[in-house]
Figure 1 (cartoon, rainbow, N blue to C red):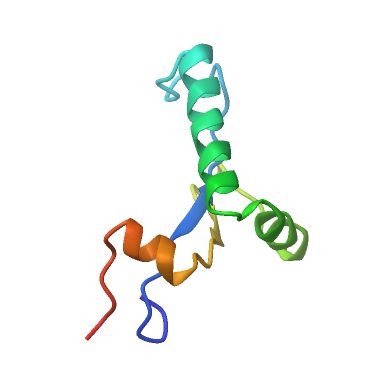
Figure 2: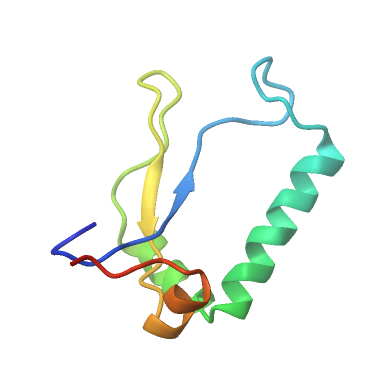
Length: 88
């Protein structure tokens, strides 16, 4: 929640294929990326995410163990479709 409004973020992690704690095969990883890409296209968030990446000054960091959270700013109809309730 931000300012009383539910929000969904795309978290960009620092893990990489081949890292010991990365538990996906190459095929699973590619399928996961494809799924995320398809959702971004379906929700019309591709250009929005490109803008968010360009504006973002943070970078994923494995040493400190944090991800970069990019707000998706989903339209209300998508939030309804996902059954995400508004705050009361």
